Image (cartoon, rainbow, N blue to C red; front, side, top):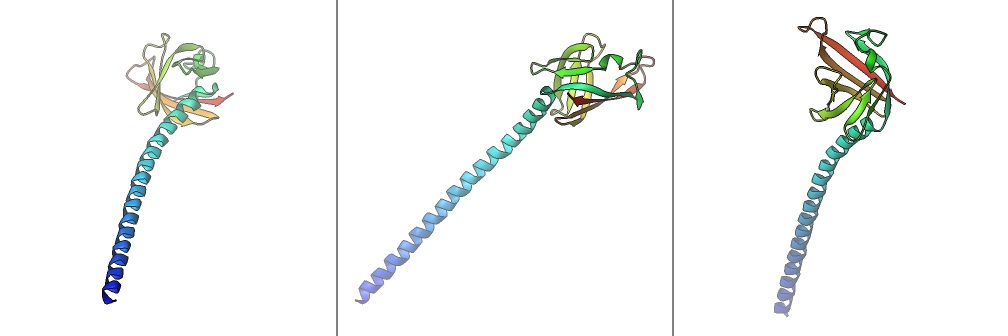
Length: 162
């Protein structure tokens, strides 16, 4: 009888160890699955953010709100930003129009900048995106002065979605 109790106790301990190991391996599998899911989630967040920026920019027709050079309005007749006044459209195929200019655009610097190229400007216009939402776009840049190429004009253009 004593041998039966001892044998039964041995199988109970063995069973407990088996159950414990099974739970540990199951937890490890779940941890591994959770880790893989977390990696995919983080990588998709970054892509979603990038896609959102693209969608925000290309999804709206933008109307100029303020066009400033060194803090002063430069959108009036004969002013330096007069031709940027009006509507801007950033097409999905990287073409577009920007006021009366037509040309190409692209993102740069991890989608924090927009580069606009057009035959109408002597050099590409590299802008920093200060704000981009579904209702507002604000870009800034420094561009060589037309009267004194050694100095930069500080330009800020603000657009509202139509």
